[in-house]
Amino acid sequence: MVRRLSLLFAGALMGATAMSVVYGSPSSTANAAGSDTYRQLAIFGDIFERVRAQYVTPPDDQKLVENAINGMLTSLDPHSSYMNAEAAQDMRVQTKGEFGGLGIEVTMENELVKVITPIDDTPAARAGVIAGDLISHIDGEEVRGLTLSDAVDRMRGGVNTPIELTVLREGATEPIKIKIIRDIIKVKAVKYRVEGDIGYLKITSFTEKTFDDLRGAIATIRKEIPDERLKGYVLDLRLNPGGLLDQAVSVSDAFLDRGEIVSTRGRDPKDVTRFDARAGDLTDGKPVIVLVNGGSASASEIVAGALQDHRRAAVLGTRSFGKGSVQTIIPLSENGALRLTTALYFTPAGKSIQGKGITPDIRVEQPLPDELLGRDVSRGESELRGHIKGAEEDEEGSGSAAYVPPDPKDDLQLAYAKELLEGTKTDPAFPPNPDQAVLQQ
Image (tube, rainbow, N blue to C red; front, side, top):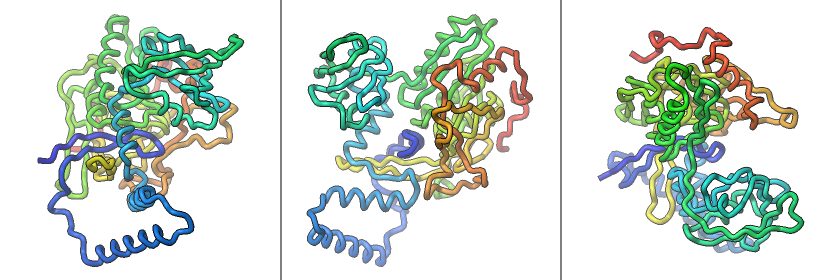
């Protein structure tokens, strides 16, 4: 029996965006390889053995094979790839939304790991780690020379295992050693806050916990703002690289009462899967504005496209990344997994956003700060070499600047959305008219 679990992945450049997980054997209807193909495979085997025997230095057999496999897959499109056992495990951790760790958000500064903030009620917060701490050593090993990814990997680990961080803290005359016991860290996929009479919802990724987090956030906002005062919601999908397809469907469903949310279409014209909304709008029809930019990909675009086509929300910002392909994750026993592009997805109006992206109803550019002027912060599927050409792709391509200012006071896109919801600014595209929904008949 073949079991399927749909997911979404964006590829190496964007992080997680569109895929399915398949357990079982390849379809018996697949085209059998011809004799010429097997002759080519024999040539590959011959070359492999000659490299192993005659290359100037002894090569790593495993790396040779992995690179050969990835060479084959990346020649198809930017999002098909082979994941070894470690990479496959990392992918599972990302989509699960929880891991054994410390509970800190970090970045790199002057070759040291800088703590942006400790997450409330986590081992790091309880042990006394504070924002601004610079981590110089992890279990006695110097951080300098490590990449941020390497450092994060070293800080993660099994639940109830110890770790010692050496931190440099402003005002402290000597380095501080902090011993921490790792615990399960549950990453919040949805951040929210109340701004006056508006509920702000920011979805950072589509993990297994996203819909539950969103439902809880909406419930909390409705408790804090009486329905008669609540003017609407801002749903921020900027810089969201995607994640699980079922979560994208559930998030869209949270704002819809009926209708198609998304469909996927594979190589076989009969291979079409549709996902429909169920009755019940968690926001009771309150106005919604969706924010997107060049960092909004795949699962984010599914949500934006569904709410836009149904005229349930106005989409504001700049054109999204434009990744409309679905990757199937095929576990390979204990040898990692194959990520293979198997379908394209389509919005309720039957539009493919592959290589085109979601065009906002209300275009609002976010100015770049001085330190980013002249730098290319634009992101888009159409810029990726070897990307699948979308049916509706045009000369303009997909994507736009993938930048959101860290201080909300500098966020012009958010400010514009709030003014529309508050009624201090008007725009022909807001509020959208559901009677003019551009759905496929």
